[in-house]
Amino acid sequence: MAVPSNGMALTALNTVQALALSKAVRHLRGGDNLFEAGQPGSTIFAVLKGEVQLEWQEGGVETFQPGQVFGVGALVSADHRRHGTARALVDSEILEMSREEFLFAVQETPMFAVEVMASLEQRLRAMQH
Image (tube, rainbow, N blue to C red; front, side, top):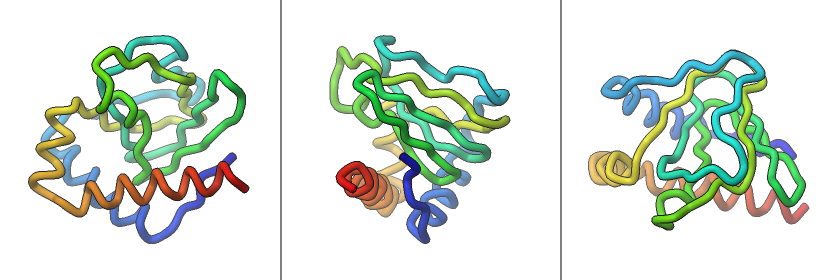
């Protein structure tokens, strides 16, 4: 299931691009796995360029475009395990953030938290349809 893109994703993209200026960016080739289901996870990810597909263990697929954030479960659970496998569909650039980096980003750019929540709500709505 593709996640719909809108103006909120573009705003979030601007935010994550600004954050990426101070962090190393992960470069993936098309077909590379970012993480696999069952692996421990303590970071979230934002797509800067390219496209990432998340295939859920329970079934279902989501596709993330530039400006979209995923893996947020890792922020709220100390012993989080990934619920799916994330794979780059094309050559991609991914920003990875720890809980501390995410909280700093929210402190510096409060709208980033709203953008992440809006993205989550869009994903939930898309899953219901």
